[in-house]
Image (tube, rainbow, N blue to C red; front, side, top):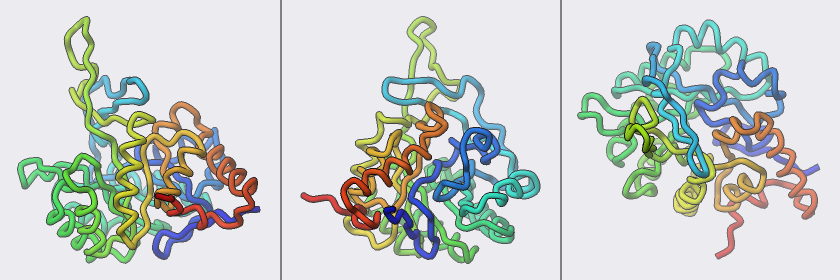
Length: 303
């Protein structure tokens, strides 16, 4: 059988496939449908220090080739996560990666400290696609200087591996990724959903209660692939590719352009078994071609 193990810094995964934050809940929701223990890792729904109610409904609408969501980072908050959600996840023998966020630098630091004190967390994924309320709502991940500063603060607040999740909605994703790497990020997740909007012509109103939302699904895959390729060709740290992955061929494309692992998001809504089928498909692809180790595929793009 082909070897599917990959490493994100010091974190070893049995295979490169995991859910994208916010699309897998806290694991409980999918546990009756799939064997979570077969995944490379579990990435939690985004956690903040305090509970967050999120945006008004409607929160999700289907678009051509994808989905638009305006959940607004609704979550149970740190205390409920620690007491009620994490114990369930720890029953599975896979790494638990906690996605988390804040609205100030100090919230990111405090979140890292408090999550690091919990038993069993393998890594933190810092979502930098959030508004910095002390800087007029400018997104943390939009400017290299800010990304460098917040990565540095997080690294000083935890000994856990740090994965920095970035948006492609920036002028130069390479410079921003290099800023995270320069301050010690262990890996980078690319990309977050792409800002978008949908209108109901009959009412002439937005279809989402939050007016705008994040576009995900197959429609953004070419954007995500380009971002991963641009960064992977020059960075020394692993990249987790995200965006429009619904089958094993999509996943393999991300690995070929340089991703070490992938996250599946919208694809889980269409097919709850998507991640398991992707793992099986990757293994089949490698075996049919006599490839013994998935590392032979990673970064193998020919130009």
